[in-house]
Each structure stands twice: as C-alpha cells, then as structure tokens.
Image (cartoon, rainbow, N blue to C red; front, side, top):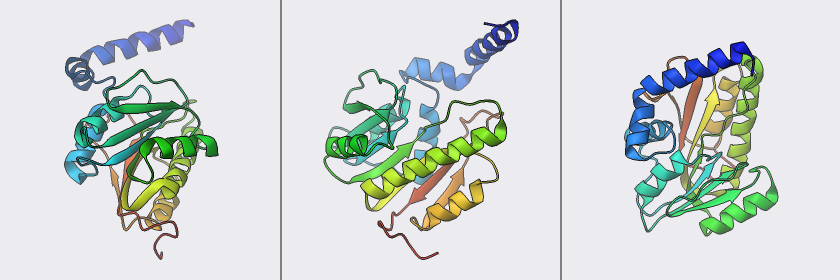
Length: 213
C-alpha cells in the first residue's frame, strides 16, 4: 500500500469510528451503516410491509436484507443477490450471481416463489474516483436493476435503487416514470454529506409495458 493509500485508509478508519450510524449499526447488529438509509426510506415512503416478497440486488454484506427481513416478518420472503458471497442471514435466501444473467434471474424469482412485491438495489460500481465514469456505471446498474424489476415485480409493486448524481440522472428518472407513476429522488439523513448518492423511490409498478409518458 502506498503512503497516500495508508493515509486514506487511516482517515477512513477514524471517520468510521466517529460516525454515529456506524456505531449504531454495530450496537444494533446491522452489518453496515447503510441499513439506516433503508430504514429512513421506509419511514418516509412505506415501501415494505409484513408478508411481502422482496428481491434485494447488490445485497452484500446484507444490511438491507436484514432490514427487509425484519419488516416482512416470518410470513414474508427476502432473496438477496450479489456477485459476492453473503454470510447467512435469518429468513433470507442468499444467491451468489450476476443479476444480468438470465440464469440468476430465474433462480432468484424461483427462490422468491414467483413475482415479488418489492425490488431493492443498493448496488454500486467499483469506484474509480472519476466522477463522470462512476456516475455512468451507477446508472448502468440501475438500468440492470430496472430490467430485473420489470421481469419480476407484481403490478403495483415498488422499486428502490441507488445511483450517483450526474448528467444522466434526468433521462434515467424519465425512464423510470414510464413504468412507475410515482418516482421520488430522496436523500436519506444517513447518507454521508460528501456522498453523491441519491435514492430513487418508485411506487406503483404499471406492468411490463409501463405507463404513457
């Protein structure tokens, strides 16, 4: 590791140690502070409820799946999918695979027992530090997650996806509004101030063909 990288890693560890959401996640048993982003989205938009079936894309290490499993309860279903292996989570089925692969898509829909009520995506690209590139890659991930949502959501279902801010955000939102009557960009309080993350909360899936623009 270079001297610069060592300094960066030291700063990251120091900021984690003073981050109240990081500390809260450790105390409450969540695998990452990102759990509170979904909890805050849930508080405002009520995208999850007891008994639902949920696909969690880009799920590792599993904090969003933990939140979803608690909310949908024992009568619900949560399927977590990621390129990385996910350590077991109570009442969550974990699948290691590529969400763009038809085989993985079939596997996760089968695991969910058919069409689902909610698709979540906290997926993010491996960042390069080049803002435009990272933004473009994050938009590609949302389009991939939207493709999964179009194939798997029940009519009236909900979709939540993370993206980095940038010039391709308006056309992405316009595309989402072709499938969901309600699309709201949202910044959860738990998002770090320096972050360029934004969460797109989409409710009321209109079906495969979408709504009129």
